[in-house]
Length: 430
Image 1 (cartoon, rainbow, N blue to C red):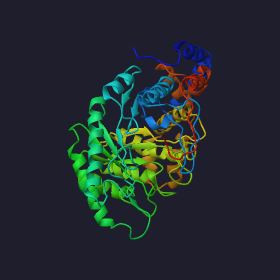
Image 2 (spheres, helix red, strand yellow):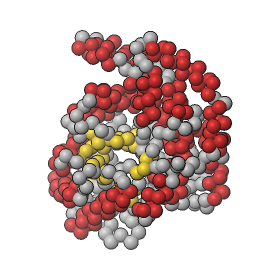
Image 3 (tube, one colour):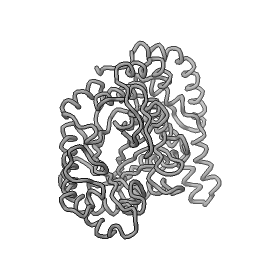
Image 4 (cartoon, rainbow, N blue to C red):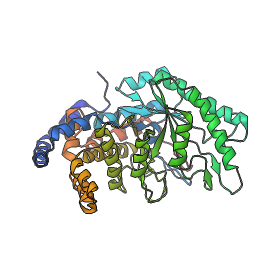
């Protein structure tokens, strides 16, 4: 049996005080859904099986380009991060895997695997880092990595990605995510076509190193740290990359990596249609790549994304198997609390999308009844599915109210007493 960090007795006491009210709410919601021809237990069962990966870097306090203000009990290393991820998994029962970032999380792979297995955690996609320089690195990535004009720098970046694959093989990971900061800050700084061709050549070398049962995810981003141009700037370029590389290459969609007001749900639909949707980095944004908590700004957009995902799931879309991960930066909140709530928000959007009357929606679409089509979506979105999510947590050993249970346990104060305080002042996300 997996170890737990929060006392099982505390979680049981927490749940006992809330169980009666939850059962009444669940029964009431079940009756209302039954009138719509929806079996609440079937939705609950799907929610129980739905998980989202935690990014190892997400449990540390984030920062901006200008400053970082560390919180109490900052994780000192990847093993502290795994313990923090275990708390999130225990209380939400929605985050069964951790996604590592190398070299930030570099350690003996067997020791990492053993540390995670203590808590019943697995490992999601590996993430390479060629957007910043590591200690003792021979060549700098200041002017790019996989698209760099210097062949030696490109080879160094390729070798790093191949190393990530080797580490992941020991951990049981099945995917590599490649995001690069390559681009330019001034017109004329780079030749667009040559830079992209160099990138594709380097990616082909990485792709050749993938095991047969692995997938390669490429991630697009329109700006930062390059602000005039980026090599992989949008989903169209990302799709070209996936098509050029082969059947194991897919596009990763980060919700914050798009221009304001871009129709992300339509991008998701296109990638599903052409069998190149690899997965998601879930977060939210107000202006750009803010990496805010999921659902904190535009929860309806998140629902619309999941409307496309559920439509593909229920229709049995060919090759549909997206990976789900959070990708957030927590500057003013407790990262564990934010990640717990974000995991719940992803489940919430999934549950709401499962409630859409798809037969009615298709009929209104065929009849060009725009008003009733959009109202069909809103009807599902407006349903409070919290009782479904809470019962799913209760049945699988989690907490009815994860944040309340976490605060009752005093975990943050405990680790703050054990982990040395970290000085602030620098920028960056780790």
